[in-house]
Amino acid sequence: MGELPGSHQDNEAPGQQAWALEDSLGFSLGRAHRLLREAWERQIAELGLSAPQSAALRAICEQPGAGLRALARYLRTDPMNAKRLADHLEARALVRSSSGPSHRQRRELGPTEAGRSLAHEVARRASAWELHLVDLLGQADLRQLRRLLKKLESALSAAAPPAQSPPAQSPPARRPGGERRP
Image 1 (tube, rainbow, N blue to C red):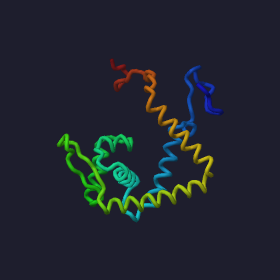
Image 2: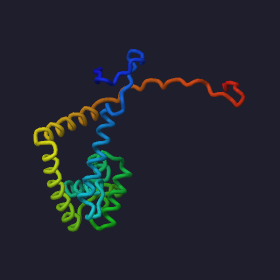
Image 3: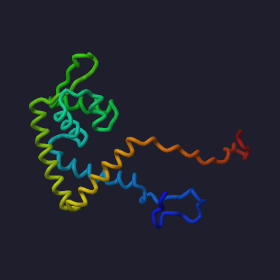
Image 4: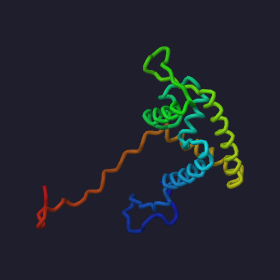
């Protein structure tokens, strides 16, 4: 495994590296995601949608008739979260749901005319936002970032999670008075 400069602490045993938090890919991606989401939500705030709601609405418009599980898989969220998003959009009359013809419990989702109109406005703002990102990063870097993120997502989706190392053993707890607990 590669080592990042300045992130290995000399007092660690071989094979047990301590990485600085800001050197962690997951931490960096999480921070960037939160910054992107905050900025995107400012772009769509007056539409009365959160970022996940706008993504769900666009997904439903792109895949009318899909069920909640398909929506959850597409958004990479759990089915209960997809249900909450769909319920919110349905309460605003932006999507409609109906029972599937082959299975009464399958909830198929489709956009209403108001939903299609709002999704079009969200897509227009998303295009403008993408142009802003090109201004910030440049076309080549943004294209490379997208390519690398898709590659990472594919690799993580296909790979089994690594085995977890056993937790560090902590000393036995002591009772008041200093006795060790079993």
